[in-house]
Length: 88
Image (cartoon, rainbow, N blue to C red; front, side, top):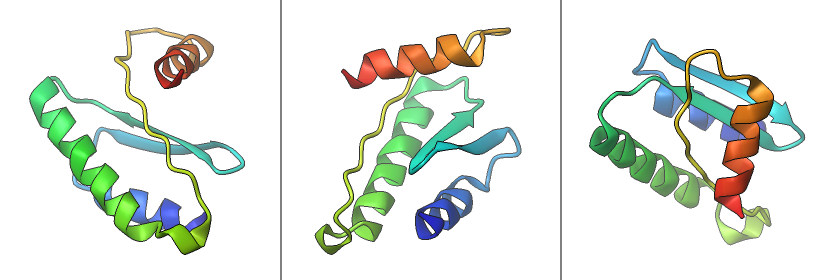
């Protein structure tokens, strides 16, 4: 988990408007302020590739990624609920 956390921090450090938080256990949330959807998708593709390279099968980890938009003043519960919906 520490290795993944360090990799997340290193990948997303370029942006001053990025927040990385551990939700619990081995679940993380990354909030990225990005207005250009195509740029964000490219960032996510690169991030996914980096994690897939890091988490080789011998780690025994399952990697699941999801993204959703954040609305101003949205509660964490609502935001996480939307992400859960995307994952299903």
